[in-house]
Length: 149
Image (cartoon, rainbow, N blue to C red; front, side):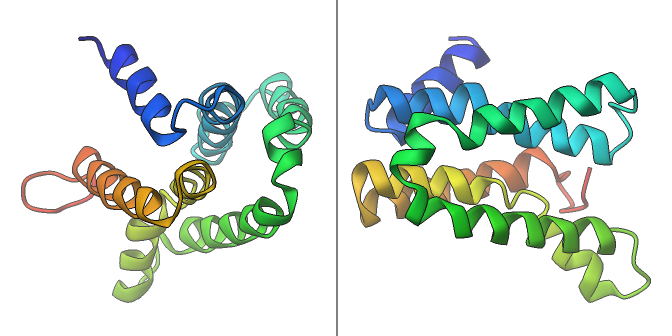
């Protein structure tokens, strides 16, 4: 099984097979947050790339799944944005606690995945997805000594 198949299987499981939720997470939200991260990291410095990400935001926030769940997701987006801004600001801080905060919260966009899982499958389903995804995020971005990579 390829990584793409794993990702598709994961998205289907997260969304309990809900096609609109799957489309929102796989084709819009995931792409959007990764493009934002690439801009912050300097991997998408071209004005055209930055503007394309701004244009993608229109599709993210006009997606039928997002609009159907606007009351549940709007504030979450603002909290994710604020937490990510703190993580970016503190990732190279002289204060150890701020660097640790940044390391643990750099994947805050995953909170949308958990929220979608809860909307599609209830609280327990969201809890299962949360534990799994946070472990994957940690292990994919730390070495065996627990150091960020």
